[in-house]
Each structure stands twice: as structure tokens, then as C-alpha cells.
Length: 287
Image (cartoon, rainbow, N blue to C red):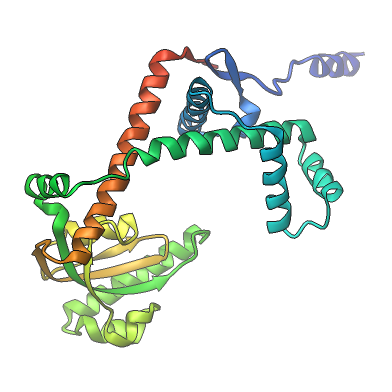
């Protein structure tokens, strides 16, 4: 009898299969939309997506069935799915209905439309604005002559692989301290095409390389070697050969103009999301 009662008690224990984690303008965000163990950043990212969709609707943007059909055909073609019936089966096998998939795709297309409008606000950078920014932020026109040594890793590398590459990089740093030149080490050990040239990357401006690589390279003192530095490509040792600050070349000015376009567009996007958040009711639901 005791074992039967225990079984009944266990069976009657409530199991939470889903819950509301936030409400944006009356629309709930479910835990199932984020996945198990999702961090708070994931909740905020989904809130921002919903705010952008609401902003798009408030601007009169609309995604019709024809646009969704076209997008579905593009997805099917890109993934070499033979026909629509097979595509539907794949969607339903993932746990969603075809109607849910079409709704999600329509929201993505709406988000893309509003993003396009917002980002276009940052495309115009006049010569006057460019000159004012150069005067106000001279570090933006800085370029550095760099060499690097790369121990290549995939973005999906396991922790032990990253640790092994970092240990190898530290052993190479010890060889530098013993008098081996950076060029020799790069030629013998780097897994980048620049290895044959002693790791020489030439003059590099801001906004060109991997963010982690750029941060390390532009914070280091001229003449120093920094690392190990993990980027999307692997683990680096970076040597700063020289630096300069000038923007008299047409190519460099255009590179800076493109960077300012991106920065202006990102600022416009941030302002739009902040305004949409003030106008909408956003409520986070605690556990």
C-alpha cells in the first residue's frame, strides 16, 4: 500500500512544462521560445525583437502571404529540399506546426524591413561630419603595422583544444624572451597565410579585424607582443611594429566613413529600441 501511495504522490507532483517569462505590449514570451537554461541576455534579445516588430507595425509595414511564400521557397532551395511537402514534414518534425512556422517567418521578414529602414538612417556621412569626427576622435584614424602568429581553432573548438592552443602560444612567448625573432616563430609555427611573410599583416586600421584581435592590438604598446588572444579564428600572438595617425588617403577616409556609417546605424537602432520600449508595456516575470 505504501508503494502505491508513493507512486500516486509522485505522479501527482505538478511539472512545469512552460511558463511566461516576459510580456511585451500584451504579447507573452514563453520559456519554450528561449530553450532550457537560457540566460537573461536571451530574454532581452527576444524582447528587443518583439519591440522591433511592434515598431514595424506602428510604421505601417506589412508582410503578406506572397512574401512569406517567396521566403519559404528561398529557404527550401538553399537547403536543397526537394519539394514543399518534404519541407513541411521537416518543420513539423521539429515540433512546430506549419502555421507557426509561417507566422515566425513573417515576423522575421517584418523585423528585417524595420531594421533596413533604421539602418539606412546611418548611411549618410558628409565630409564635414567626417572631418569633425577625426578632429574629435583622432584615435579613429590610427592604424598599426602588425605581425601575428595564429594557432587556428574552429569556433566550435572544445575547451581542452583552446587550453592546448593557449599553452602552445605561451611556450612560443618564452622562445621570444630567449631571443628568437617574431618573424622566425611565425614562419615556423603560424597557421595563417601570412606565415610565409613572417606573420606580417601590414598596416591595419580599426573596424577591419576580429573585435577581440583589434582590441588587443590597439591597446598594446608599440614594440610589444601580446597574447594569447582568442578570436573567431583561433589563438594569436600579436606584435605591434609601429603606429600612425593620418587620414589623408582616399582609401583610408572611405574606410573611416564606412565605420561611421555602421556606428550611426547602430546608434539609430539603439534609439529606436529605447523609444519603443518606453512606449510599450514590457514586464519581466520572475520565477
